[in-house]
Image (cartoon, rainbow, N blue to C red; front, side, top):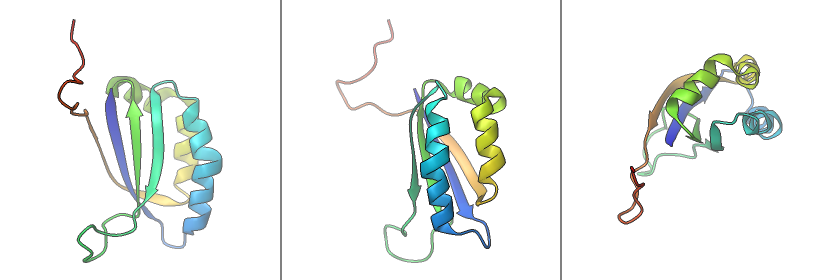
Amino acid sequence: MASVFWFSKLKAGAEAQAYERWVQQTDYRLAQGIACILHYRVHRIAGLVDGGGRPPFDYIEVLEVTDIDEYRSAMRDHPAIRQIVAEIGEFIVGAGSAWGEPIAPLGKERRMD
């Protein structure tokens, strides 16, 4: 399992309410049909934890995926992701992405038999 993080900013002139409605009505529905995505949520960034300054992005998408290579393959080939990519550009510009593997709590490690 891997976690994927997408960081994004609203495009100039795009409305947050319209983007968030699209996420709720379209993005979540399409993502549910992609087998390698186990969990997916978009978070509106409200501010920095220390309270100072402005965050460098407006939203973060957090995905739990079965495998990073399976997700990359879906990014290239899955029709739902092609639709998401075609539509999301109306609202946001990418500010970066990253992926990682969760660190399990002690006693909860996966067995590697």
